[in-house]
Length: 168
Image (tube, rainbow, N blue to C red; front, side, top):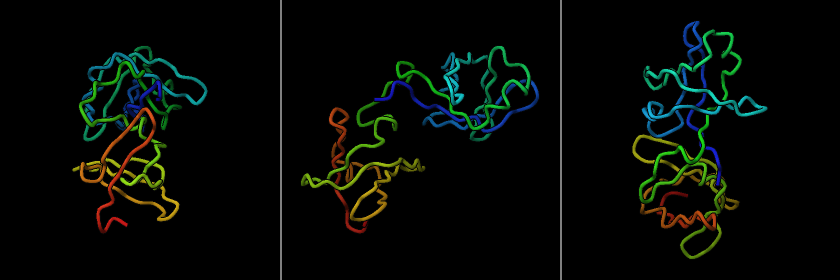
């Protein structure tokens, strides 16, 4: 399991006073209101940035960090990810998982036959879609619904699925 959870990516600066627009990678963008800080992945290290102010515009969060008061101090971090420690993550309900925990999971059919590996998760309006790399079928898109996802075992890193007719 990952120790850090990705909550967003800096897309661009906002104004000249050091604010940034952040594309949230969390289910709930309002989550930023509850955070005191984020960890900026600079490519070399994780830099703690204390959050001073949060507001929202369309699908983006606009963040202001303590000690960053100039566009030049933050502009170089466009495209960088923002992370939080797992302990700061929201509590999950039944049958909810952090995407980071699902990535790379072995996917097997209900009869135990190995099917492939979970490559990515596409977040859509109605339900997530799991992107599975299968040796036999190539890339398979599987809706993350109870009829298809029978079991997720984080301990063993295995997901058991049911392939509905027409998915392949």
